[in-house]
Amino acid sequence: MKKITMTAAAIALLSSMSATAEHQYIDFSKAGHMVIAGPFNAVIPIPEDSRVGEPEHTKEQFLSETLNVSRAGYFADDQFVMVQVETTNAPKGTLTNENFPTYKIGDRDFRARTLCIDISQEDLDADDDPLFEYVEAYNVQIVPAVKAVQLSVTTDDGTGEGNIIYMRNAPGGCDAMTPEFEAEFDAAFARFIESIQDRN
Image 1 (tube, rainbow, N blue to C red):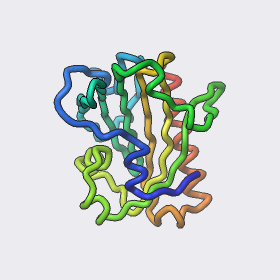
Image 2: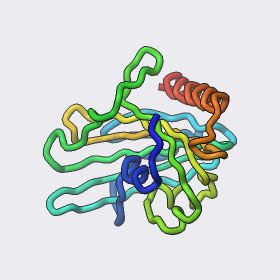
Image 3: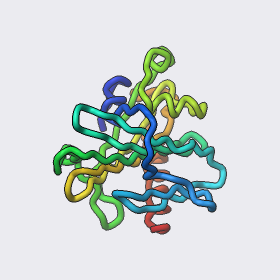
Image 4: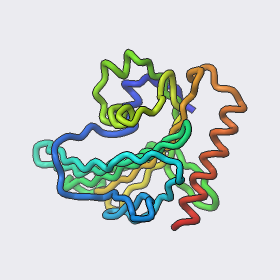
């Protein structure tokens, strides 16, 4: 597990997007589940006691490259889940997760990484990263730190990428995480993955 600063985490976790977009890769069903469509298709069950963040759909232009991004999240207790799907019109192979280690979930291998991110209120006040802005808008406690697992999948041609980021507040900071906290985190994350596998 890595311990990194907020600025590095912001860059590592999610890309910064802006402007209005017409695509919608993430929506919510009438039953209240998160539905992912487009380059990937999946349903993520949402616990009944959750607060759901509205999906955001943005587009960013970089010279001849266009990135279409959808982002949504939900928050329950001291854990929160962010999902981001993006596509690019850049050449095939542009989007890759090959630098992520392999993570075994059930009988399947995923690309994933585990992080602990120290975050101060001063950092939040001074930063305009869309991930943290989104989380803050829903009054989710992320100071002084969060532990996170980022699962990543890319399309075969490398023009689409999906990320699921599962996070829990680490009340004492990264250096103060106990074996009990980490065991509870791992168990809760396993239940989260099992709920997705059961639904799909």
